[in-house]
Amino acid sequence: MSEPKEVPVYKRKGAWVATVVAVLWAFLGVRRHAEYQSDIKKLNPLHIAVVGLVATILFVLGLMVFVRWVVAVS
View 1 (cartoon, rainbow, N blue to C red):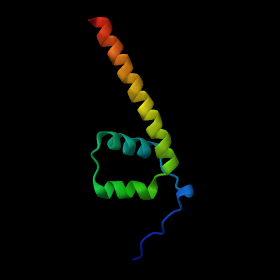
View 2 (cartoon, rainbow, N blue to C red):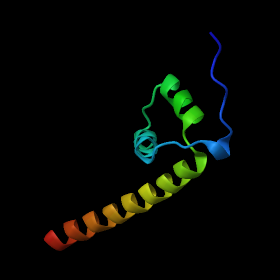
View 3 (spheres, helix red, strand yellow):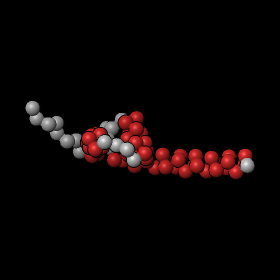
View 4 (cartoon, rainbow, N blue to C red):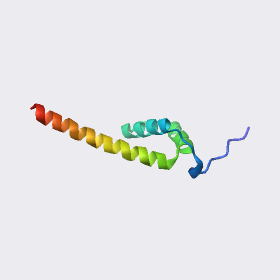
């Protein structure tokens, strides 16, 4: 049995849902090495960058809303 050929980075289709899950696990900092390697082979790096940027912006906005809420309640 031969291993499947590696797909060039620019042709990787990578599902958006799988990309979001991979980025969320990365935010938590807990991911098995084997799963990380699997993600590298099938996900598009451009998708990972976009999802990571959007997740970071949402996280910061969420923190800002939370702080305003805490300050308003006190």
